[in-house]
Figure 1 (cartoon, rainbow, N blue to C red):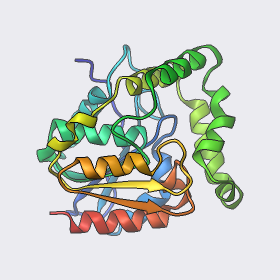
Figure 2 (cartoon, rainbow, N blue to C red; figure 1 turned 30 degrees about the horizontal axis):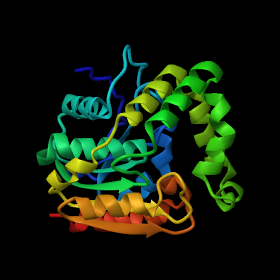
Figure 3 (cartoon, one colour; figure 1 turned 120 degrees about the vertical axis):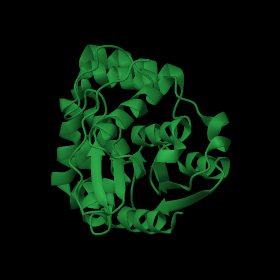
Figure 4 (cartoon, rainbow, N blue to C red; figure 1 turned 90 degrees about the vertical axis):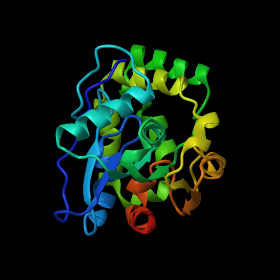
Length: 258
């Protein structure tokens, strides 16, 4: 089993409060959650992690699966003595969350799977993107990512935020991004959702064409205790576009979870 090293931020929030772990999307870093995390810290201790070769996480030496990224998250949490936590992850981060629930549900109190799916896209498309990035680099994806990730209103309203997130895509290691694409190509837990007994909130965004409502509904209906919720006026990176709305519904959901 290949377990990539995962960098995490320091937990911040009230001493003794429940822990919330946040996972970002492909090509983004912990900064995706900055505004929403600030709002969650009133009630929880909050930390975020970077995917392999993204942000502070080192470039992995060999390919990995989504499940192995999840194992790396557990190793990082073990290193600071954290066991139980709530989880929220966007897109790639959402797929990691599903693997965490399947691997060690005793450690997860509840999970919000944001703009994600039990399977995302098709294998040929992911392999094509991996091949393109190995040739042209992640910078070549920035224009298309801007259209997929944000509504035009978000770009106009928060240019500094959208620019910072797009720059994180440019700065992501090319080979690591490609390996993440290949991990997503092989990711499919649709038939395993029924094993997930912990509360799951599947969030989708009104204008998200990457992971539309049907993927969130499939998750909510497939797990044993699922709910689905729409974030208005947002595209694929809902926590960056509508941090207050995402934080509010996640805060309420985590607070009501057993």
